[in-house]
Image (cartoon, rainbow, N blue to C red; front, side, top):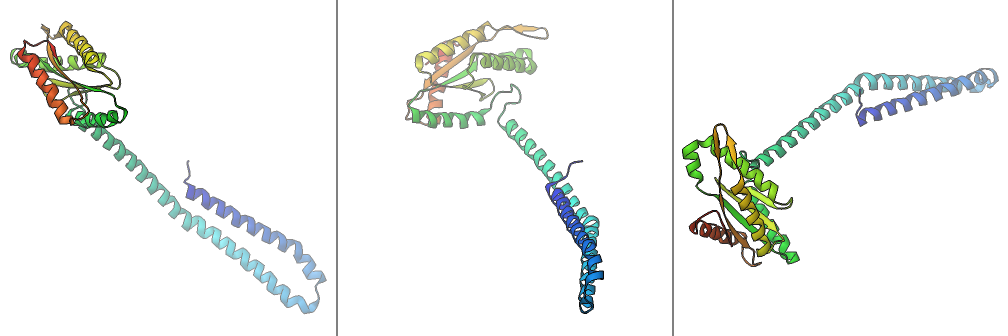
Length: 263
């Protein structure tokens, strides 16, 4: 059985009272014979008063101990129990809040970050990397002809395609890259500390990996491709302007025939 700090303090307090009472009766027991045999008659009333005071002090100590044990300690115990319940409730609510916050920032289908998280992360990267004068690359990726997959094979197959695409993006990005699903079949990657040439190489590897995927679900076996638009922050534009510029490159890739990277 674990005790609260207040309960332990109470036990220490009771122990001190008991020690004081024991010391009091020890002194009384040691002096009593001498007081009865050697004291002068004129001091006998004083001795009686002293004896009465010792008995009264001992009685008050006993009452204090009984009152503490049977009245004060249950109150302390009850408050400690309530505090423990409140602490557990607070921890449970905190854990639930973290879970809800995680859910609010995560795409439920793919387990990736969502648009809300992406917007905040992109703005934070731009702010921090402006201080150290380093580039920030942005990649927007969109599956080609995804609507046809849903129309032909159903949304369950389409969902599996998105999940496998998400796994592919995780495999080809770095731990500090931000990878998010920002639309139906549209994904975005914040790739800090990459210039245009390095960002193009990364995007090309991802594009090729997607084209080489074979997605099998049920009786369906298919391949997909993706178009990719790139932009590297010019250190002046806003996060929205950077996103719009990468998005224009994505649509340029679509117009040029899809399954390509455009920067």
